[in-house]
Image (tube, rainbow, N blue to C red; front, top):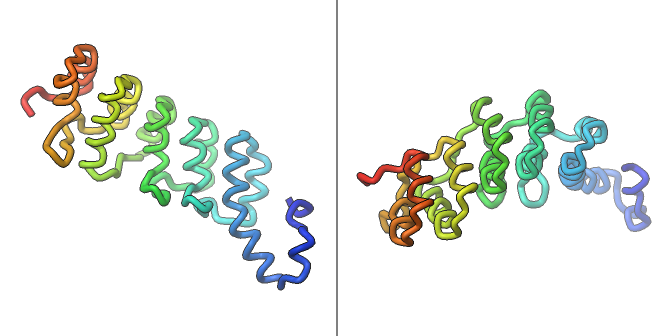
Length: 185
């Protein structure tokens, strides 16, 4: 990495400016290591940065591991002290990224280690309703695995079950009922 970061345009910069630039780039490099499942390089990078440092979008190495569903990397990161409740600039925690990308094993692992869905209930309802409208049964199941209350209401008071009934999607109604949605709401 040192050779790569020795650009000619850095030659007239102060050592403090060069170090600041390195510190801003390291979280992105750590994310790339996670994406490539390169634990050895990640360990080297983590010698020079905090494990919960964020890239330009506010993502940590844990965000990347959960986004791609790399449960073994999630385990390694937790062992190194990474946290799973940090939100990125879009308001997503690592658990939410695992849900969004339907990585069931990663969702189960995070829940077993204490992660919870921290999204605002209305936003959660809107995400569920969006999954119902898209007929994305796997995404509805991912939300269920994460312990989401399937009776969350959107701004209009609608639940995912309301929308499934409105769309006359019998299979989705059945799936929602299996996941704990109540016809009483």
